[in-house]
Length: 315
Length: 180
Image (cartoon, rainbow over the protein chains, first blue to last red):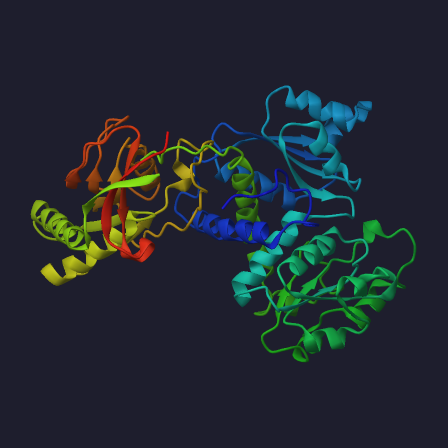
């Protein structure tokens, strides 16, 4: 069980085998989190830099906890209080930090491809915590872990992403990951927020939420991202809710065992109603718990397996 | 890697495991506060069988734990086989209990060192003892088994493999020689 990749930059091109390896390890890590002492010494002596150029609460905390649970040392870097304000480039920033001997960089940055760029200029393992609207692989992995946990498998499952697909790095990574694992992927949202060529990826595009609800086993409800809208891509939040909001009434028309996910933070009463978010079909808090487990799994797997030492089992 | 000799066949494995079980029961004067914890990947199979034997001999159900020590290894950077981290299942609070760790082969002692670290995170047992199916010598740490199935002196380029039905489709103990 070793990963074939050295960094986690996205789920585009990542094999089902690697994804399964990560999810299996995450299941074991979740058990560690449930112990009286939820800590293991595995990454003792390893240093992780959390390089967050964009705001984040839950992803940052989740990564920090994952690192600490594995006994790694964490260094948090927040751009507002750093030399970035003096104009230091990304490459210089990380080269300087690397000179202090680090093993991992977990980066969230506003520019798509920034983590790929970083991976090419450092020796450390790079984990993409979100590069602009491009990818957010750890979120998709925790979504898939949660789905697999609740539904038993991903293969053949009808999973529909609802909302602002175009601007959502969560949806992009989910699409790549779910397709790789054999799920049947659907998207639903205003036509202005769905990329033109999604059907060519083998994805079902649902113009109406009612159809998506009738056919899907799992709904991943995305946040309407007010900060990413540059033009008026939908009239008002109320209009969005009227047409696409997951309300209790709409949920009644869905499959009786439908599972509801949301990456958070939720706009209650916009894309999802409180009764649904807090109801029995939703696994939103499980997603958060699983997020720490998945991130632990990724850090653990990226640490080992680079050597192919064929020696004797030390027992 | 080639098999040099078969040291034990299925029947011998069974006899030895039964004897080890009796030894544990003898030492502990029964099963009070006893917990048997097997170390993956074969120690847990042996432990399960011991629990079964104890049920037949004493009529009592002793709690069974399964320990995965992958996350506690000290040779993290040099995996010889892919490190498949699996679940650790300790079903009861081990504080004040008498734990008997079970492993298939005792060699350098590093696996047991890792197991002790893992176990201490789960509580404070009254005692921890070690039962191994084979002791092949060459300790690198001050670790000693309390119960030994078989002592097998080995050379550095040899390895002792304990095969169990659950994993290897047969019960046996073989001596293999590693290619130089």
